[in-house]
Amino acid sequence: MIHVVSLGMVLVGLWLLLSGIYEPLLISLGVASSVLVVIVAHRMDVIDREAVPLHLNLKILGYWGWLAKEITKANIDVAKLILSPELPISPLVIRVKATQRSDMGRVIHANSITLTPGTVAMDFDGEDIIVHAISREAAAGTLEGSIDRNVTAVEER
Image (tube, rainbow, N blue to C red; front, side, top):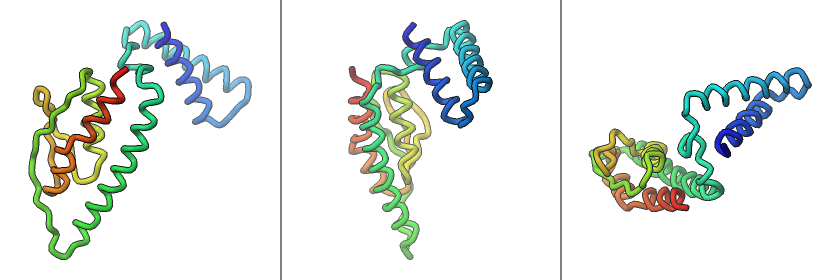
């Protein structure tokens, strides 16, 4: 039940934030539409631990900060590759171990790889994520496993 209530609160908060109009009629319509969405989602039985990941709580904020720093560093590396007259790219496909226990953790891991410039998660194969990297350096950074460790830390209780 806590997932249902928290989903409703997030939807109402998001509606208020995005609408920017705080008149009683519009606020009541926004609340009503959010309640309707929660009722439909609850009847469809799609509100669960992964749909409303309350267990990630504040740990995810630290992860986002770390990921933003890694994305910035990777952007600089890719810019250097592109601006170099020799264009020293060496594209390759690698397998990266995913140690997360849940599907959501594995998806966060794969999306984090894709968000990092120079790498794209292409597919899952068992416990591995198939990744395309623009250079050997990008591949080495992904194989180093810092994304895996940080996502696993966020996933743990």
